[in-house]
Amino acid sequence: MLPITNSNIVEVLQQRTLSHPERECTIFLSDGENKSCSMTYRENDIAARHVAAFMQKRGISKGDRVLIILPNGLEFVKMFYGCLYAGILAIPLHEPAGTKQIELYMETFLPSLKISKPCLLIGTSEMIDFLRNKLTPEQKKIFAGLEIVSDKEILAMENVEYTPPELNKNDTAYLQFTSGSTGTPKGIMIGHSNIMANLEEARKFMQLEEEKGTVVWLPLFHDFGLAAGLMGAHYSGGYVVLM
Image (cartoon, rainbow, N blue to C red; front, side, top):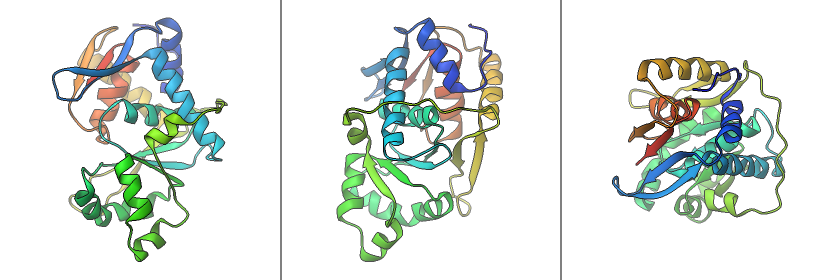
């Protein structure tokens, strides 16, 4: 375990990229059993810088808010870390499966949209197609002014240059919403200092170690799946297996 002297998870990821760039950090099992894709710490860093640069090129700046509505997978990891690299507040939310669920999702999703006031929504190609072409006139008014883009469009963008922002341990890192199962979803501000303290305790309690794996079947919009599962593994220098 490398000594953690960093003030935020972005510095930790960049330090690990320098120390062991070819070590696998994220593995995805599409069917729950077989590896379909993976990333090394170097590839993770390159992807996060690319996503951050894309947002900076679009005029999205530190402190702005971005909705991430994606299923578990490498694309979610790239988008989430890209927001952190840019100092942008990611807001991970439940991802509906299929057009019918997207239609039903609109009603439960709107409170989070109104509360969070994002400037960008990142979703799957199917969801972005629905938002661009199948909204009712009333829904179009709600989404007016909100830029929407798919993860694939972001990753395909060329000629983007990353400018590292100044990240302070007292800065808010991202917003975590409650499920809304017992009332209107509530947004919680998670700071960089919160993340680092949480991950250090998770490392000790879960006995996370260098090059050891953590399996996560929880969704990454869930606080435990995102913090202790994804970031906890990377903080400790290991790898996370997503399914």
